[in-house]
Amino acid sequence: MTRPRHALMQADRAMGLSHAPRNRAAESPGEPTPPSPMAPTQDIAASERPIAGLAPIPAVAPRTPRAIPALVVQPGTVARGAEALEALRQRHDRECPHCTTATAHTQTVFGEGDPQARLMFIGEAPGETEDRLGRPFVGRAGEKLDEMIRAMGLKREQVYIANVLKSRPPENRTPFQHEVDACGPYLIEQILTIRPEVIVTLGGPATKLLLATDVGITRLRGVWSEWKSPGGEVSVAVMPTYHPAYLLRNYTPQTRAEMWSDLQAVMARLGLARK
Image (cartoon, rainbow, N blue to C red; front, side, top):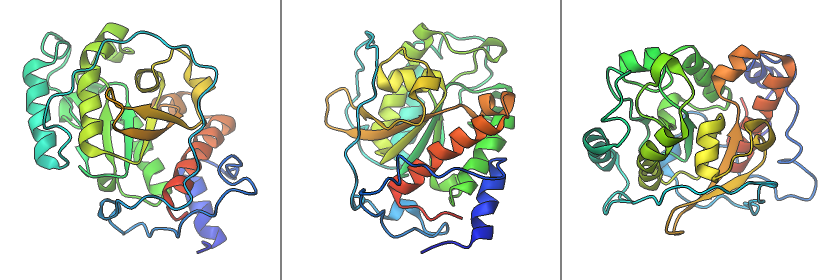
């Protein structure tokens, strides 16, 4: 269903754009027509059917593989549901090699949202506000992420939001690689529990972990890639894009247009209606 022009402009304004470019990669001639749009009020967890006409995921190039520690997935975490996520949260808080030794945080921030979400957003680490409230993306960057989600025609509770690190780094600095390697396996288990159809990685640390690369986010963003579980039994489409905090620091027409283009590609892949 074609949305009225004024409704499309509302989504553009949510991203700070007077005009949002169409994502030509997602809408090039000859590709299959996306599935029927899904109304924003529909529970996206209710459907697990494959997306009709899903195009093969192209490989990201160039990529620089790097060695990462073997990820040990505990038995039972592939069971989908809130109970499995809560059990994983409790085990993380007891055992995580990073979060149980870190000292700059007051509490861990595990993640929140629909435990069977089709769409998952992954950032790098909690900030000061997240650490205080115990919820991911609730500071200024979180407010911008909420605007992005609404512009996609979704509600925050219809997606799942998490970070690579579950504890706040000192002074909100970028996570170190050894911290990512220590806390990262628990994120992998979150993904295996939720089984989303698409992951949007927000910024460099999350993108580098899932794609096992050292290539910068400015070269990776906007290009579909694929994450595979350690055993290879699960694969998820990945769309890297900028972190909302980066967008706030670089609030230029080009940056806003690029990020909105990335989100439009995700909407097309999931068959979401444009508002």
